[in-house]
Length: 440
Image 1: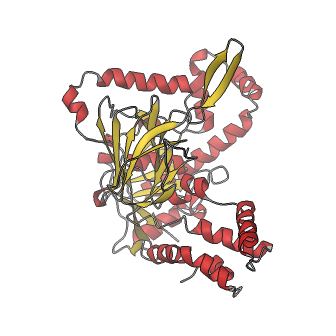
Image 2: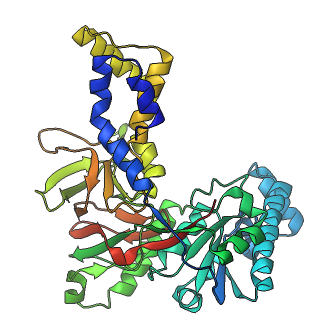
Image 3: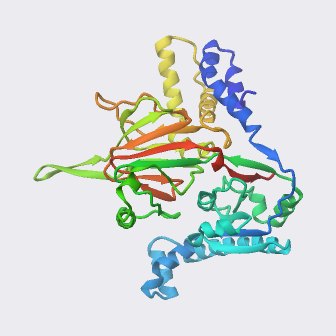
């Protein structure tokens, strides 16, 4: 079945247009066919005995934690937020909305006789996962990604509830309607009026010299460069007690990627400064240097701003924004094509929008499709470094680091050191599927 945008493109009846759109037609159709099979009707109701509700850290809570040990009064706290351009009352209001919605989730569960354990984001661990029959993420997509990262049992359900829809998109959560009507969602779940969805997740092996498979939790909030480097230094000191042999054999890392992983120099937009004369200093971009192999193919030396590898779930997130085209770029390319070929290419707004939408739709694929999508950000191509494929689908990606201060970051929340000599093998495995819910 053709996408709406593709049908609009073909409706112009232009042979050139038909040939242009045909190249991505199979990918679009393939994704839509896969999407029809991404879920299965529940054979029985959702009846867990024990549920862990993992709650996000609100901005209000975070700011309080930052200044708790400074001995600030509540009035000082308000003034400090005002100096930063933040509203104390606004943060408190959003915090209260989140808290009320969490309370509704807990009350609904307890009324059904379900044992509930409320766990703050920072306290969520493997013990919580083992205790629970099911886990509910109460927050946004960031909280859902954290919750999913520690669940290794593909039969353990994970649900996301967006507790502040006005401030969080919540792509991975139940429809917004159920934020304020969780009891309704729970009744549908208990009656089996939903579908199961098993989302693919990325597993990573790390091997080579000087590796450190101990993760650093970045939480939802960014660390400064110095804080990030300090966190990795601490874990490196801890890891130094391991034997040399244990560092060289492949390690299966203790997290799974639901959206994507990113490999690159720490803060890839960071500048390095180089002095050429006593009074002349230039700022130069710090590129990521590595070697990459796709599906056991030949190794290729590359320099870029880093690389992203995503699942079907993540194809709607960062990967989409890395690769999507805007109408201005599509119009420029079509205009050049028309000039070079002399062919009758329509350049009206509707056609340009249709082509743009068709291409961008081709970047999205089913969360259950067993394939990865890699993207090389801003590759540098010269006589030393090449880039045969800037993006594409793969079953397996291997990366050998030649970086000096790099990290492999999983779902924006967990970081692993990834410096010169380290080798990462990235793939999918059926045992890593995440069991989630589709509720209409």
